[in-house]
Length: 219
Image (cartoon, rainbow, N blue to C red; front, side, top):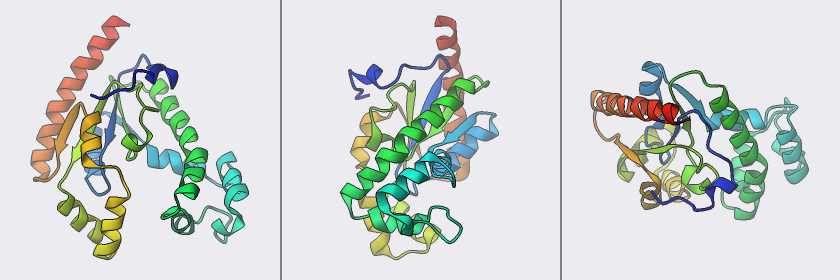
């Protein structure tokens, strides 16, 4: 794995064993997460953390309104996610401004869940792991859900009911498959059947249980 030599500057590793689950849009991260959850493993989702970070009344939402104006709120005073996406999608400066507000709160939320987790190990589902590395270099393992781009394209069009052009631009806006593979300790191939995916996850679960036990013995 290509890890930053200065990763400890970002946050020390927790005593509890944790893996980061990542993959490009429409790769099938949710399906993999569900397989682990059926095995009794807690999965903490960065998308849930991001929603919490900008919930009505939160410091995050107040900071967004200050930065972008009240027109990013819906009629109920909550963040209008579609309006926000449109504002930052092709505007790098605006996107970076939004990320500077949301990402630190997401990291804190996830780390708090890891520290409180009571299972043998847990997973963090982080779609933008490669884009935000090395801020998560304190995890013990990185698990990549790898799916061919054409398969992801078709899934994305079906899932979001969007045009091929928009789907391609969404795929292109993320980091490359090569960058994700550089970070990955383990890779799940999600181009096959649900049964094949389940078999891969069960094998990883057994490996992670051993690694978690080894870390516990050392601590």
